Image 1: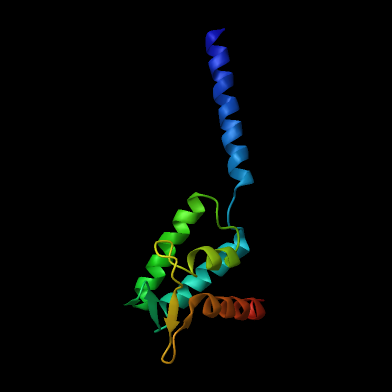
Image 2 (image 1 turned 135 degrees about the horizontal axis):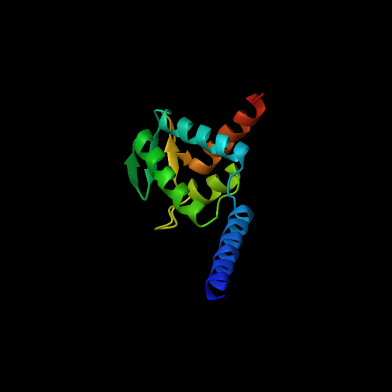
Length: 126
């Protein structure tokens, strides 16, 4: 009887884990596509990225955003491309200073730049 009870507890624990995972699924398929497209856009942009007063390459910016995204996904804090931009691509978690981007002209907030690209993606998606 004791084995039967512990097996039941294991089954119940598995059911709770599966239910919890389903309730906190994170990005849906569209969100995954949009975030992947935004990350690709950043990495291929030829722009300079300014984080905490230091200039980074597009590839470095992409890698940094991927790290932040993975951290946020593990904590179920990103459920859309907008949340990715707001929580990963806007300000430094360390200093609170806004991220900036420079694409051959003046510095501008990365959040505006990423939101414009997201709108363009959505207008051109089939």
